[in-house]
Image 1 (cartoon, rainbow, N blue to C red):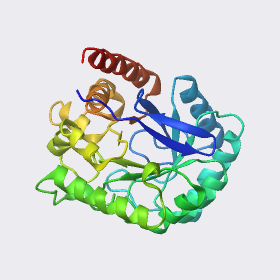
Image 2 (tube, rainbow, N blue to C red):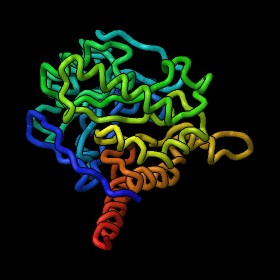
Image 3 (cartoon, rainbow, N blue to C red):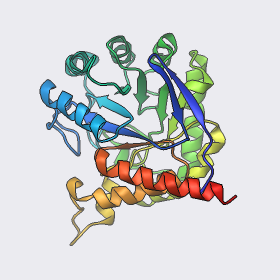
Image 4 (cartoon, one colour):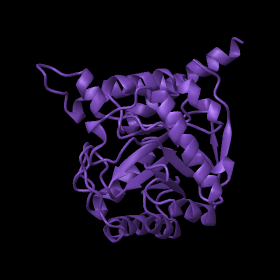
Length: 293
């Protein structure tokens, strides 16, 4: 259990404070093929309804993605991403009162999404796919989430995995941070994510969660996403078969709790109402720990 440093992200709509409490980012996949909920929110009405439901359930941010990045998935064009994203962003304008993050690796998608109401960019490639995305974030003054991914979604779980996962993550994130700054993104606008499940073995995901405090040394707020991921399915396997995504909620809760106790500022989740309870409880525990010092 560590003392979490506080940060502020500057959005068009105001300041977003990190560290005083855990922020919950709700996942909205407007895709036909995401690993957990592909197709459920593919049409605009269902997507809008789900975004508003997550807000009611206590989400602090909604992260909208139009491209599946599950293991084995193939990339889609910027035009197709925008065809899926823009109608949802337009429909949410004036209805959603919490910030929207756009989950994309493409600068063209980030630019039009920020113009259509998104306020944060979440790049799972850590700028490896399209470094120009950083210049878009800088132009709009938008916070940029940089995730570590070893390989690409199509092949990332086929290995070879790093010998030392934390060293690999730290090295990759340092490069991503340097690239972001080179393109004009301010130090105070960068959030980092170790990329749980993205090019890591099952055991390495647990190692990274246990060693999260090391990432605080990079000087940026930390986001962690473990929600319903494959390593949890492997942990819960029965008769050699991984537990389905829908049956990983308690395992997700355990890893969300561990992430918060080890310093996460933001947790990215599918089950907002349930994980909001976890966050509130862990924050109370952190406050109690601080008061005893």
